Amino acid sequence: MERIVTIPSGGLVLHGILYVPASERRTRLVVVCDPFAEEKKCAQRPLVDVSRALCASGYTVLRFDYRGCGDSEGEFGDWTLVDWCADIEAALQWARQQVAPHWTALAGLRLGAALAAQVAATRGDVQALVLWEPITDGKRYVTQNLRRSMIKAMLTEGDQFRPQAVALRHEADLVDFDGYAVTARMRAELESVQLAAHTHFAGDVLVLGIGVREEPAQWVEALASAFPRGQARGIRLEPFWNRIGLIAVEPMIEATLDWFASIDPDPTRPA
Amino acid sequence: MGRPARPDHRAGRRLEDRIGMGEDLKTQLKQMIVERLFLKVAPEDIADEDNLLDKYGIDSVNLFEVIVGLEDEFGIALEEEDFNVATFSTVANIAAFVTAKRGG
Image 1 (cartoon, rainbow over the protein chains, first blue to last red):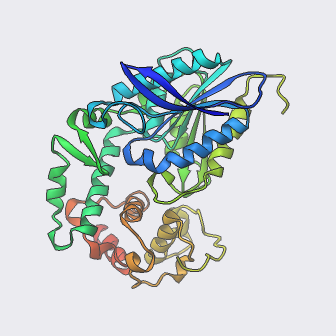
Image 2: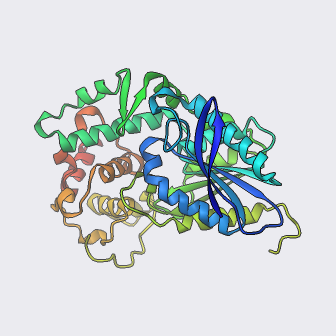
């Protein structure tokens, strides 16, 4: 069953979808944390598919929009990552009150993974963390956005293209982040993202590398090793958060469910 | 976008492995481009002078992946002045760019 839900957070109302399995002995909750801006838009449908697949396998799943995003209240430019972490906390709190889970996981894609890790590390009621192709270094993430701006300008501005002008635009108070107006405050918070600061989270962690190779990249292995109970896995899959057009994400669903099954604490659950 | 790729035993191999197999730079670049863009063509079917943007529909999103590939797999660091459409339009041009960046 899927139902539209509203979640109070910071005086605003967040929009969400709660996926509840038909029947389960135990309630296992997964709260999904979205990526940033245009990546969220591209990943929308794949994350719906992931949520439905997890639900079909017996997990209760909550997907929600951060304030200023999607169908939630607020304007995008008014908020920052601090507010979005508060939204993850609010969503978690709300869901736990609604379904009283025996087990709770936060699952994040890209920047959502970094925010999920930050929130999980501060709470005692999250048992597992799923990091799908996480952003680990905010400075690099912002630099890559400049790269994308350069490339777009290079392809569209023809003779008018001036790389120095694009770089200058990237230093302004309001920066074009793939079509989203990012304030200086938000940019500073993005640049300060360091996932390594939250590797003290004591629960089970899956770091899933999504890219050109089946085996996990070195940085995926290193990140997983930094957690006390981290595991690294890799799947070959197009970076759907960066693509126009629908990409089937079965490998991501399979890897996540396979890992969930491997850490399932219920000794009575059939293997 | 081209005919389906023939099975390629090199698919997924790391760059250092491919260098060990004696592949030249253009072959390595074609392999990287096919892998990173998930193109349904065999690397050897990409001609050195094919216009990648026109023939394979490479857009800004794809070009970003190519540039990340050049940085991650070929050790190239791009400066602002390196962003030029012509540089990335063909495998031959990309190879010349990489060679120049490496001091060759």
